[in-house]
Amino acid sequence: MATQDELEFKLKAGKARVNTLKSQIASWSTKAKVKGVSAKAKKAMETRIAAAQKLLDAQAKQNTATQNEIYKVTGQYEKLLSGTDRDAYAAVSALFKSYGLESLAGRVYEYVKNGYSADTVSILLQDTKEYKERFAGNEERKKAGLPVLSAGEYLATEASYRQIMEQAGLPSGFYDQPSDFNKWIARNVSPSEIQTRVDLATQATILANPNYKKALNQMGISDSDLTAYFLDEKKALPYLQKSAATAAIGAQAIQNNLAFDQAYAEGLATSGITAEQAGQGYAQIAQEADTMGKLGSIYGSTYGQREAEEATFKGGAAAKKRSSLASKERAAFSGAAGGARAGFGQRGGAK
Image 1 (spheres, helix red, strand yellow):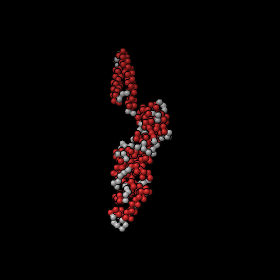
Image 2: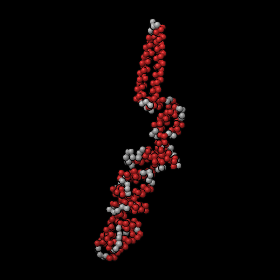
Image 3: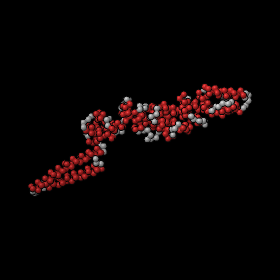
Image 4: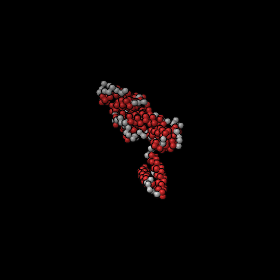
């Protein structure tokens, strides 16, 4: 197919030839009307005029065809139609342009030119490769047995996703294109779930304190991958929520210069321990660590971070062990101001 520049050059040359032929016809017509011209000369000029007129008509027809080709190349299909056909083309092409499918304008023109109504054209276009790629999420929904979204519903869902991303301050180009949203739509991920995911991602990145990030890093999630991790459609929301809660508990341990055990923190998160409760608990554990460790050594026992965590967050045998160590200290040093008692008793004892 010729390019726009080639077609415009061809049209320009064609128009110049039309002007030349018109000038020739006008000149011969004038000469043929001069008095005294012989019948033979007049007939020769009339023959020339007829031949030139034939060439003129053919060139004008060719110019029209070239102009139409330019309209097609430049997408000005409405100039090739008239009346109800032009109205149908305008309506359908505007609709599909709103879908980001202006590339189908030529197909719309061909269908309208062949007599199809606007409604029929819209249905036919839904079977094109371009349409299926634009609404790829629907194709996956069909395979999964989920109801297909109308174009309006699909676009509204995309708009909701996009608004959530913008309000969260995510950078341009990050989850803001139709191709980014296809998988979410295919998996029937609602905007409300995406809002929750973005909140988790925001917590993990923009608003995260250094200790929270350290905890996530120890869980194998790098700084550069934080947002993408929480927006990954392959990860179920409960899993992401547990990861966020685990990191929040781990951050409290790190904040108090204690070890972060992912598996243990995950267990605490699953049992319902909040970041605030973890903060209070680990602060107490850090405060008592030296004293309780010394008491354990004195009385032939061990009392490390794990026992302290168990006693603080779960109670049970570990809590009894802590109380027992404190009781032995009080019994042995009753009324005294021993080093261990000074460290532990001034804080009000174990709880």
